[in-house]
Length: 235
Image 1: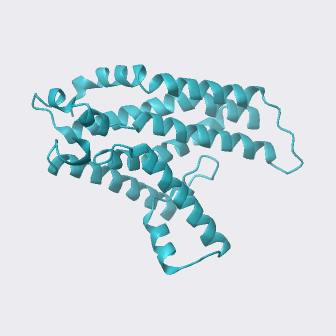
Image 2: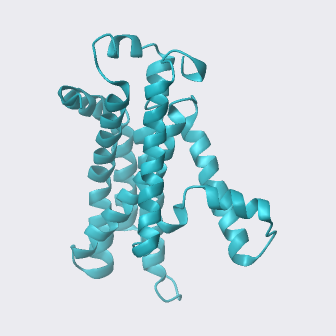
Image 3: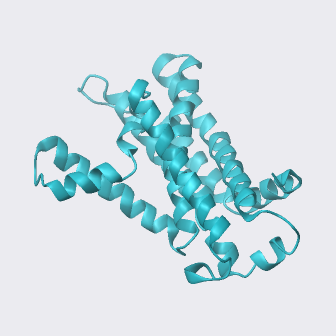
């Protein structure tokens, strides 16, 4: 692992996507602490707050990973980055991990605010951050893979996220159920299992999420390892 680059990566993330990430976190935190939620539905306040946290977390993940690989290749920075004997797969794996840390740092105050408002304690914040980590594993892993061969990686990831949600709704309600849609839904990342507003997956569901996240990251590393660095949409 090119650990000597970790400090520079952290600075790049802080100076680049870190600024809009902080803005998103600050805005979400302001809404969570100041907006009064009135509803007659049982658990309505928890639903709204967790939905806000889930949405903000997804935006943070997209900001942290968008163009993670493709921007370097589109700008020609890879010629400088890898002029020395540095492994591209390990370099971008480290960058992906740094992005995940940045997401959790920004999400922590929001998770704490939600936990205090709902339970009056900070104990639940840890569980919310674990769910955010699982979402990064899937959504961040998807953007990582897409970024190895697409310039608009984050946009395609959003479209796939929306497609998965739409097909999931269709499967649940039985609307427009078809073998083709069922196959596509089964192949898409299981975002429905890792939403911050959902219970923490356990057992087989957790194993499935973990294996899918590993597969996404492994596929991204494989592309970086075996595909010529200056070919295709990345160049």
